[in-house]
Image 1: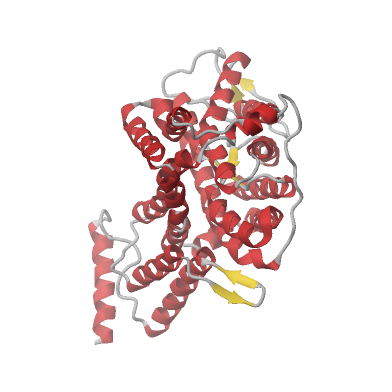
Image 2: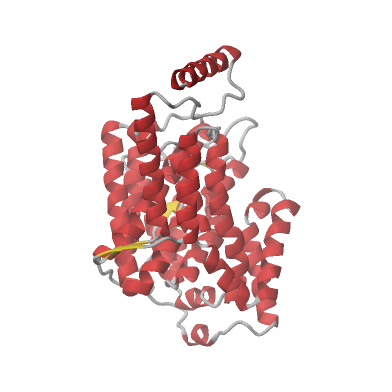
Length: 451
């Protein structure tokens, strides 16, 4: 494979995939099939990527442009070893909306750029020293809490859009729920996109869609670029997002490694660096912050095609679509009711992803450290506590994320010094009997010491 990762070998006869085999990142099918798979990736990312700019008031075509550019940049920096599409990150929704109220769109873009810079720096450090320090800084209890509070912090925004047109919102939400269990394969994975389309049709019938801007837009033209402004006050809003992006990115690399049977630990730092660089680029021009997309992992799992050639096609096709202002304005016509129905599911899913992290890692909530970390940080995030220090205003996401980190590491340090951490941090269910017995015995000894 070349330094850019653009020299692919043809898999088999280029037309079929033998049972038990996959098309590896460095392979490709025949170009017509590769183009077809690449366009599937655009469809897969479409609904979620466009929801973010619509919810935050950013230009959809600009976001699409930078998602395509970011994807190609990611492929170059990772040298074609990690197949991924970089779409709009949901983690940016809350800080972008909050910063817009204080500093407008340019101020929000400045926050996106700062988040990207920090993520790129973390990627460079991981590439040099490895990712183990991230796991120690952000164990599953902390990562899960931060992801959960970011999603649940957005609940009021979903409610406001839902109440704007309850009938349309309810139809959208019900469609998403039904489609997710009614259909198999790629259609089931695109339930949010299908729900938005159905909700949009209902909104049209009810006269809730306005086409004035779309009618006035040209068929071909440049996306709406906008420069960022930098304000110290956005730091507290955007730094917690970086923690989520790190968790998402590393999780993506591990997922791809598991599915392809390749060891990608050596490229995890490059993946973080690439995601950070793409986010910086997006923020500099008016787009939404990016992240590796789980939706496209679904496409790869369904097709067994992990070829990065398909992602070059997807990135190029996204860029091509972004040069139609009329298409961008069409996307922007999605009314509040449709957004409210989709956001109810979407924001809730972000919250539950945090819980999923706890479940997958068997976090033990009998431990007072884990229990307190989750309890306090979630309440701070959901209630959106605020704290103003001079020009800096810290909102629920920043304070909740800080609380998770400080409480966990602070309580753990005290417990270690006093030898009072009796309960294991992970559940013992499923462990071998000898290991379970050893953990229980250690817990009893510590409890006895305290008495």
